[in-house]
Image 1 (cartoon, rainbow, N blue to C red):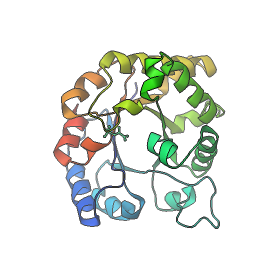
Image 2 (cartoon, rainbow, N blue to C red):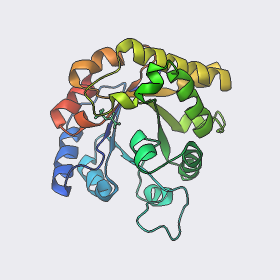
Image 3 (spheres, helix red, strand yellow):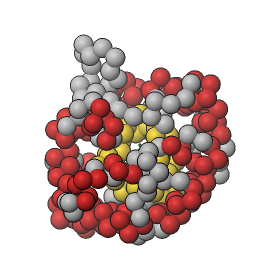
Length: 248
Ligand code: PEP
């Protein structure tokens, strides 16, 4: 039985004191037994947030890492640095990284390998832009992203992967995929995994939905049979909203 996951992505938001306050408030939320809570925090605040959530079940994700383990890459953060700090997860392939930082599927495959080599778990994002959906090519598009970014991995490695389906047209726009649109894609992703690997691997895979998840739509979205929770941007920045999403 797959657990439900509420993962927040704070992006480039919050000051140090605000991050500590928000993390502390989330750490106080009573997390249902079947639920995992992950906070994707800015790297500079990881240590502060780890202290703020100490003693709770809240886990930490970084929002990116470099494909190399060390070297002359000014300003970058490596998977080994994250591992050495006890970080559990890293978000890779977010559409903002793909779009604003030119991250290709090939680069993301490398980053994924590097993160896994350091024992990190990867929240791997995929999702189509509006014109792709309007052209009815959304499932093929996501399949291509997964084939290039993830499906070189062995079935055992997939235990360390969470897939986040995030249609770009729903991220930060207030427009959410309908329950049916989310379920259609999640079911398709699970079938892709079954076709590439096997039925057990597909059944175990956590697939999150991301794109304007809010307290008002989380319950219905998370009730879809192939939706295992959410990757939440805007609504993870307010403790009361994220607490409601954790409960959902
Ligand atoms: C995200 O960026 O991962 C995201 C889903 O953002 P929002 O919830 O704000 O749409």
